[in-house]
Image 1: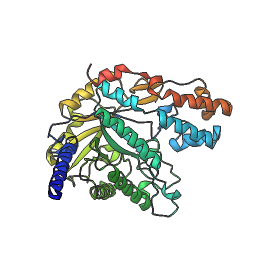
Image 2 (image 1 turned 120 degrees about the vertical axis):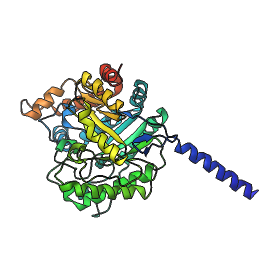
Image 3 (image 1 turned 90 degrees about the vertical axis):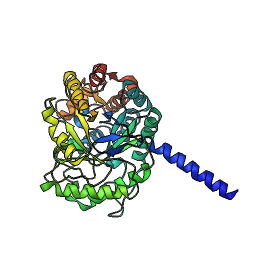
Image 4 (image 1 turned 45 degrees about the horizontal axis):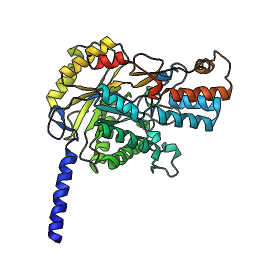
Length: 400
């Protein structure tokens, strides 16, 4: 009886493994494929503005330098406790199950999650013990919820470290960079924390088949001669991931906003893909030829991980170009305040213009209670039921 039980258990494990392997994405030759070896063309959206706010998304270009500056201004305006209440409401409401269900219904099969490291771990300068890592459940819990919604709808979730510890570049808003603190490339502790964070993410999500892959660092934009330091960090992260997770694709972005692959070829992992970003250039094959050439030369897939901030004619033409060359894509971004170029428009609440004018030095300081009410209404307005969906953007992306 014991032998029969063992045999049945082994058979069950084989069935389970077979089922689990079904939906893991893999890099095979120049293609991204599923467990059946079928080509998967990723059609995705980036959740920009959720875990990481860029000032322009909130109509704060030229007002705030980066997210930390937005927080400082809100803190000065309404106090620490109410600032935290605003951000709790923002994080709870901007992306919900209803958003994911809608994305599925509109035709998206993937999501790129721009993560801010400070939702997952403490900054190095706040660690109680230097060199150690304190894990924060806030970011992991948000990711778990998002993954559950994606799993339910059959949508791949690609994790993107959008703001690495210390910040990975000179573009302050993109990675929430405070130049009074050591940046990623100026601090060994920041680099160690980046590696450790990816190791922790891989440990937690190694068996999740609807995790589509790991986009290691978004848009490095820093002078790194020959990209040697970038290659070294990428290989260290890859090693930490592979120590616990051999299932998921590792996506590598080049320097200079994802498009400079100097020193980053050939691939060093057998389940790896490169990612490029495409903004504000023609929708002609010449603009993507270098990615086609690298893909062919090294027999490795490419993914267009970020594009947008343009008009619908350009969107339609860009997607047609990408898909005709078997490049999956992820558009930027899901929601912005008072904008027609994103997927959804967050409506500006009454009183928000007065707050902006104050921060610009063009108006009086708003009453704290009124300002808090306005900001909480802004958070409420991020919910999909309160947004205006730009269906013309959806239709442009899907050629409708």
